[in-house]
Image (cartoon, rainbow, N blue to C red; front, side, top):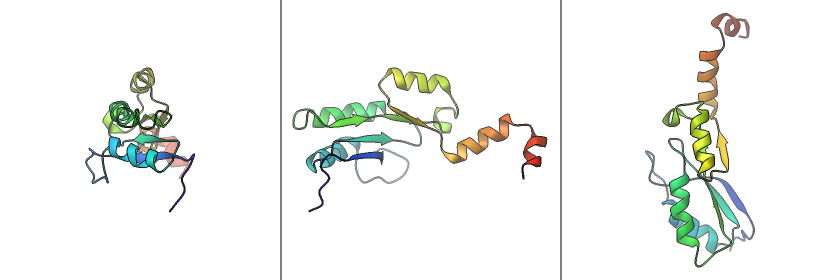
Length: 122
C-alpha cells in the first residue's frame, strides 16, 4: 500500500462543481486522513472553498482531530477576477491560499495595459 504519512495535497478539487469530480470534500478528506496524510487544500475554479472546507473539517474532526483542511480562492470570473474584496472576505473566513489562473492574468493584463504597449511586446 502507498504510504502517505505526513503529506499534504496542495491542489484538490471536489464536488459539487460544473465538472465531474471524484467525490465531495468530506469524503475526500476522510480518504486522505485515513491514508495518514497531514492535510489538504481544497480549490475551486468558481468560488471560495470556505464552505467546502468547513464540511470537510466536520467530517474528519472526531476520527482525525489533527488532520488539516485549508480553503482557497481562485481569482477567476466566478469571484470577479482580480478582486481584493473577495480575497479579503475569504481570508477573514479562514482561507489560506489565493491564486490567479494564467488565463485570468492574461485577460486582466489586456484590460490594464495600454494596447500600444502590448503590441510592442509581441
